[in-house]
Image 1 (tube, rainbow, N blue to C red):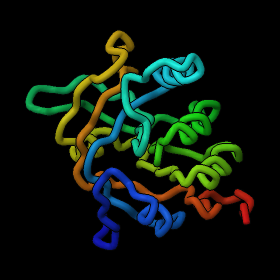
Image 2 (cartoon, rainbow, N blue to C red):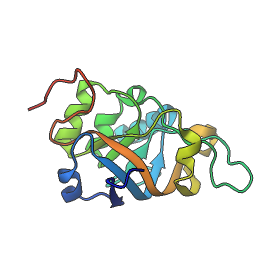
Image 3 (cartoon, one colour):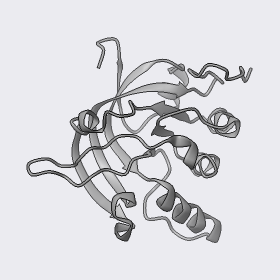
Length: 183
């Protein structure tokens, strides 16, 4: 991680989120939840049914990741990001429910950028193809919901200086070429 990266202790605060701009390099330390397609579908179904969720979304960071099994002596296997656009149908509802940031790879739909701005949330980018390297920033991992989903179960990860870039900020900024300015 470059030395100019801003080191941030989770949970995120509104003040920190407001200071971050698309393209900023950040190192996250604290708790992050993994969730992919199947877990997102279950979370949305529970929200729509008014059921209690298995995790507290308020102030949370969700990493679009389905890690591989941990090899001997490691807390987790490869833990690279999933293509984020697969979660686009779910993201605005989860931001509205209190998710402060999502981590993934790739460009998102316009409604996700608009939701980041509306709900004061961030979209963060992790390096695709670097799952083995990214796992070295994870110090603890435990399944906390939907264990029957295997790699797609929700895990609570403890990360230390986990390297990400701000992809979308709350000001309408984007790092992706071709994205229109939201101002």
